[in-house]
Length: 362
Image (cartoon, rainbow, N blue to C red):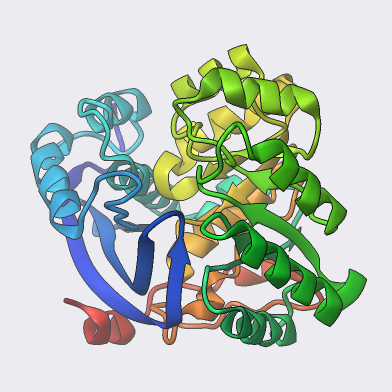
């Protein structure tokens, strides 16, 4: 097959400090985006790139493991045409797990392919819904800190908050009540429990969240408790969002078989474009709602998630504003929000700034 060929894979670790700490689940904390820039080099000089965010407590990946698996995959990819998608996907999927490494590699391959054709990802992926309602991930902290951060991002144009909950249910409700009092109907709220509830307390907890005005809740129960999750969904207390239970297309098929959720959270950070688009189509076929999520992505990852967010079938606000929690970014231009919306079509000129990358390299 013709077309430019792959001559090198490159993994560039970098670190971007956050404004404060992002805490979620039972124990997880993040004070900086310590990510890996994945680069695909072609023999015509074309460079494709994407962001891989290691999350040891979620996927088991680290910066070192991402660098290592890309080094392992390089031999299988060397010499392949960027247009031979079948061979490229076979090589990329020749290893198990390593979700964000393989997801970033997929997106970098897409990027390189479009650039080699004299186009961009926007030409290939910008969908019909170019204005996307953006949500912000509000991590677990002292209530006053959470309220201060909410005020800051609302001032910066966000109108939907995803509130991390699950460590102390009473405190969670106090925070939600304070947010509702502060913003009223101007801001929509939903919760992410990160598998911290139990089948015994979940119905009452979800009922309280519903009464507090939340739209839905993400992964209230542990993924392994599939029958309990199916029962909770059937009870209809509050719409359920699938995230941890749907890492891959195969996971999605299992969850559809058991009918455990109402809305699917697809994350380009772990699925890339190839699997992300396939999961979107499958969710549409099953009549499920869809949002596009963030794995605490910096600017480049946000651009890629934003492109998928414009596709037909994406029905919910999407997690595109984590860049507001990062002190400085790699992109040459800021990502800005207006009255709750992100104009994805306006991001076409955004790209990695080499000087900013040099400053952030680890």
